[in-house]
Length: 270
Ligand SMILES: NC(=O)c1ccc[n+]([C@@H]2O[C@H](COP(=O)([O-])OP(=O)(O)OC[C@H]3O[C@@H](n4cnc5c(N)ncnc54)[C@H](OP(=O)(O)O)[C@@H]3O)[C@@H](O)[C@H]2O)c1
Image 1 (tube, rainbow, N blue to C red):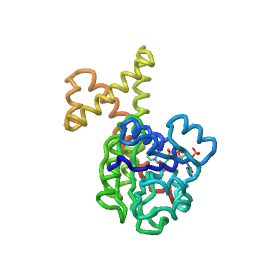
Image 2: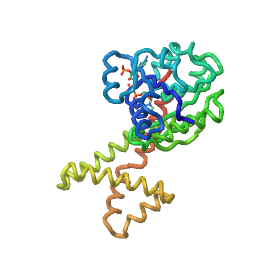
Image 3: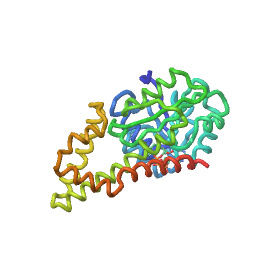
Image 4: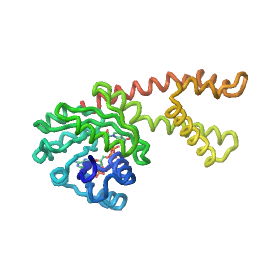
C-alpha cells in the first residue's frame, strides 16, 4: 500500500529524521517520495545534507502534494501547524501525528472535517529499523488507512495497535524507554571501568548484553523471570548482584519512572 505514495514529514527533528532514515534504509519509499519541513532556515541545510530529501519551510505546500502527512513537531507547535495545513487536507489524505500527549480528537477538531487521523508513538531506534511504535485510530480512519499507517511503522521496527486511552502509558514506556536503557548501559559500562576493563570494551559488553537479553525475551517467548533464573546459579555470583539490585530498589524505581513519565505525558499539551 505504501509504494508510490507521497509522504510529507512536517518537523524533521530528531524523531522525524529517525523515521525518514529508517524508511529510506528499508527501501519502501525513495527519497523523491518524501518531503520534509522545518521551522528555521538554518535547519534546511542540515536536513538536505543528512537525508537528501526535498525540504522546505512551507508546510502547506508539502501537505498539499502528499498522500500521507506525518506531523512530527513538538506538541506545543501542533496548533499553529494544523492551522497552516487545514485548507489542503481532504478526506483522501491520511494524517499521522507522532506528538506526545496530542489526542486524535485535538487534531480532528483543528482540521475541522472528516479527516482520517492516526495517532502514533514511535521511538528513536526507528533509525536502526529496530523501533517500537504504538498506533491508534481516530474517528474517521478506515481499516485500510490504519493498515497503511501500520505498514509505515512496520518498515522501521515493530508496531502494536493500542487503545488511545493507553497512549500516554505507551509513550512513557517505549518512546521514553530508550533514555532509561541508555542510563542502564552507561552504568553497567561504568562498572566495567571500575573493574579495570576499558570504557570501549565495557560499553560493548553492556550494550551487546542488553541486545542479547532483549532478543531472548522477544524470541523465546519465555517470561523474563524464567530467563533470569537460568542465569542465576545457586550460590553463584549473579544472585549477589541481584541482591544489590533489590536493595537499590531497581524494580520499583523503574516502575515509578515510567508512571511519572506517563503523568507528564498527559500534561504536555495543557
Ligand atoms: N524524540 C523522541 O524520541 C520522540 C519519540 C516519540 C515521539 N516524539 C514526538 O515527536 C515530536 C518531535 O520530537 P523531536 O524530539 O523530534 O523534537 P525536535 O528534535 O525538536 O524536532 C522538532 C522539529 O519540528 C520542527 N518545527 C517546529 N515548528 C515547526 C513548524 N511550525 N513547521 C515545521 N517544522 C517545525 C523543528 O524545526 P527546526 O529544526 O527548524 O527548529 C524541528 O526540526 C514531538 O511531538 C514528540 O512528542 C519524539
